[in-house]
Amino acid sequence: MGPSPTTNGLRQRLEDGSVALGILDNTYSPTLVEFYGDLGVDYVWIDLEHGGPDPWDATSVENLLRAAERSGVELLVRLPDTDPTLVRKALDIGVRSLFLPRVETAAEVEAAVRSARFRYDGEPGDRGLAAPRARRWGLAEDYVEQEDTETLVGTTVETAAAVENIDAILDIPDLGFVFIGPLDLSVSLGHPGELDHPEVVDAVETVRAAAVEAGVPVGGLGFGMDDVNEKAANGYQLLNLGSTTGAIQQTVTGWIDSYDGT
Image (cartoon, rainbow, N blue to C red; front, side, top):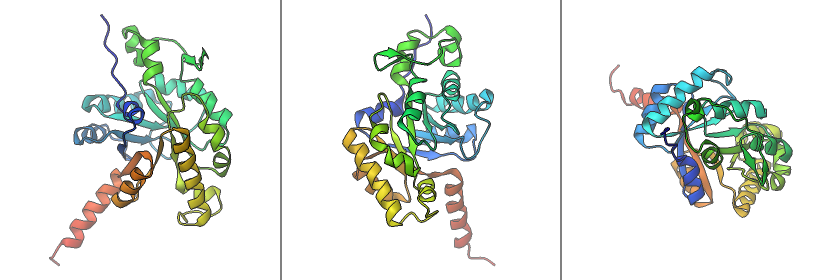
């Protein structure tokens, strides 16, 4: 009898209407991924767009996955490209939750989501059927059904074009969530770093409101716990609390500032 697949806890929380809280580990450390799981976060965000190992380097990503699996936390991987081949590769090595960067059109998102499914919206999907790590090298039972159930593919909305196309993007079957990226969105709108600029604020609200109305989970960055709590009250289900380096900076700076010596 082959190994039993496990439920994707992040997918389950979103489906249940709960809020999932996570940390960006921007040190790409298996030790810290494992530790965050022991601390009880719902997911650890690994961003392969702005740093980290080569997304094609299966060994590096597998080590992060093993750490997550050890402490029961879900790894949420942002890919650096929407290429369906890269989506399939990430899933085959064991990633179950991923999201796409810098999308502009619904067709681009749909191609990526379809590439993550064996069956898609009543039609054949575009995922390859082999015996990789995700299948426990051929030992896993009910592999096709479990993967189609537990795989979670979302997308970042961080360009002006994506905001314009948000209704079509939200209408894509099996889209797991949309994650609002206000930093890149501010660049795309011509106001880099001005997160309080009216055009940026309006764009963020357009996406949030549309996602809530469409019943698609919406995610975002938390800028302090007051902001996290406010966003959770306004329909956000996927919230990033901060980063490893941000937590270290806050703690170490606090220690230094509290030192009474000379």
